[in-house]
Length: 616
Image (tube, rainbow, N blue to C red; front, top):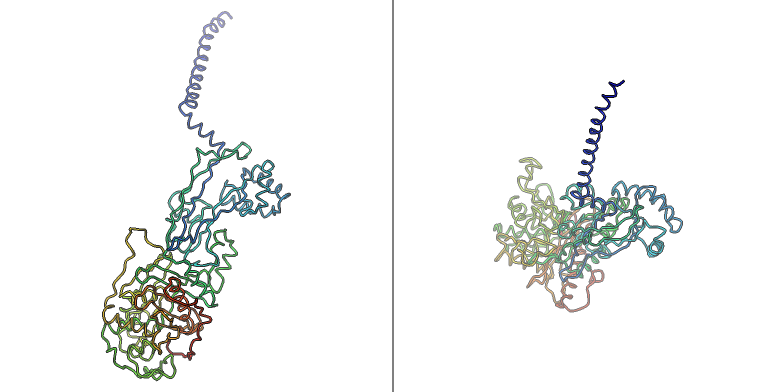
């Protein structure tokens, strides 16, 4: 017993010292840790604490405005109010919605269905209970904020477009960004809930129009009640840049009204002959871009896409048609630059028909035009004359002429989608039909702008502008280049000068001003107009109506091209629309006297006998 006691006396102090050492080490670690937390990492953990009571909200940058050539605002951002809910759990949101339904007409089942979809896409973002709140809802929420602390009224900017879908296909629209678009953009450019340009100039100039987002810091209680904004932690968003368009909005409205007055789908372009700046352009039928800015429903999108009239289809830059007799300007250019014939020589006597092999090709005028040289053939749009030219002209010679006018490619218009024209060459036919398996007979239809030749209204408008401006192929554009920058390039068309240019200008003037011209009845007193009619045969229905022109003929300013689908002859339908537009355009500039022109009440068009042959 005495021995065990002696051992205990020896081990006791050792154990005490050991325990004291362990305690000292632990205390030292605790001190070091506390020092690190309270001194070394103080700012980091203080920020965590602040973040726990803060909610950071992203503020989208306002989009820049779109202005017409006078500086007039055409597209802007309108303020609207919505009621949003701060929430932590779905149960909290459901309780708030049910409580709200006792005072305000709201379908709680539908609201929660929207909430579930919202949560799935946007996570913890504030839920818009009333995305477009009226005055009654706003007043109720503001007056009962103590009863509904999770609700607040917010102001948002919504894109606003002109009424009546004016220039819809030009301006385009904005829509909510998709997950694919977020992933495809640079980091942090877009987040779910942002809007971006989806079509037209909105899409083409997205980088310029898009604003830079800001941030709002909101102090929150533990229960989720917002106490207010913390200004020193918030940053204001930066608006996007405005874009200045070449459009004259008054004339844009007028052009839209002219096309909308007809039931047929149509497209028209009016441009400055020297610069290529587009003064007005319309595609009909159209849609209301404001519906997209408000968050278009999937069902309404489906209805628009299924509509047989294709209101979403931009006929300005996406629709290709046979250029018909407007193409005879290019054929005449090919004749003159290649010296195929003497333009003053009477090449044919038109009796209304032309035989090639076993086939008979008809002129649009059944009784014929009589003796025709190149000038009278253009003025009267005599198909028999151009059939004969088709027999004499190599396929690649005509293709080279069309290529010189840019019909083989795109015009370079500043729209996100544009289709090329089509110019058939020898190689094209060899590939499509087989080498040696096609004949010169194809050239007869090509020579009157039918066959495989295809063009948009943009191609035809700038063809006419090139004749008007002295032989320069301009690049059509909607948005004016920034001041001091290089203007859009112009390309010289080889051979379109001297006697060739003078001939084409005189021929187009005679189409309107000479009594036998196909557009003579659309003359405008006090204004000389140079033009060319065309009627494109359509295997699926009535003919398409073409007209292209420039004015004033002596000192050209504008050129235009108009296409009305399934409407008949160009001189009957498209030419009077052009007449009304040009009369109003030059009257607005106080260079033409008289009352506004109305194509529906203008003098009646002369009767044209339909035929299965060519096109006037």
